[in-house]
Length: 447
Image (cartoon, rainbow, N blue to C red):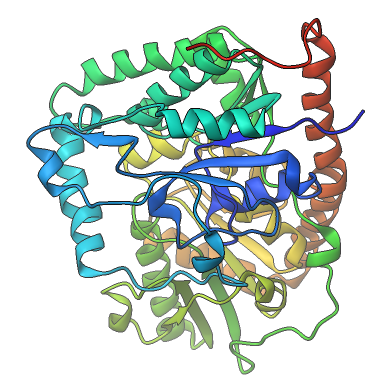
């Protein structure tokens, strides 16, 4: 049975965000002509055409802001655009503009705290969008949602299409809505109720971890199957020469995003490295590879900033490191948001051969996975003294390093091989069509 035509909403294919990488790996060998994506036009500069080149961009025509916020809305293009104008062979995230930083760090947090963010905008099914959908004629719609307006649009899309829906949840944003803000309890209840509507409309529900699947089954009364980022063994097992960042001593690397859920633990680790260097004279260097430098990095002699590199270089870079840091912050809000998440880079760290240091709260899914399966060196407390003590123990115990590295590689090949995962993923979609009513080959969309 051939793979079905899938309409994707909520995430673009790219190589520099967790959702984009996961999407690319799961749909990697899907026929290009059988995929189409609806995504906000803010993602125009972060699109990969390697897997799909049929994009409809939600711009100002579909996404309307309410008064008085509509006067702050940027005019964004709508429709199917010539994305060749916006794509590059490999995208490396550049430093955010002053306006972008203000919007992300001040404007949106204020709206989220007040609850206005949840009524700020609405995404509508315009005639142009409906025509584009009809032209593609999808058999299944795959949906990721991360805000209330995307959730409401997902419901509208499912009700309009009347075809099987696959819902894939990346993190537990539903449980951290407007955390500590005005009427946060009201919005949490309301949006979880709306999410339940989408769950009920879905033929197949997917989660990012087993723990999330168990929790969401309790909350929403439906089974959630686990699919998170797999790894292409041929890509990560490349024999190209490793990139050494510190040939004279011990290298710890963090490569990824900064911001909510990450920043505090990075600083704790940097402080521990600094004290370890001074107290034990160990030549350990901590490299933070992110889109832009954190303001405090210069305070630590042993911590260094590196800009992001193309995704194709990551296997060589990871292999050239002694340790790879996988951090999660320990604040209550961060725990609520990341509790059931499985970082995209976790299996990538595992297959690299470098030892993963997992600095994360005990109750998070990633910590439980690392601890139970012994593929990472786990630290479950945000304490400089403890991190320093544990890091020293790890550096001095080469047998432990070897054991962790070998176990991680084994699990990556056993549990996260993309060839196996992609086949299971595709089979889920094929099974949906086999179980669907095949009386009519073409679905009739509602008005």
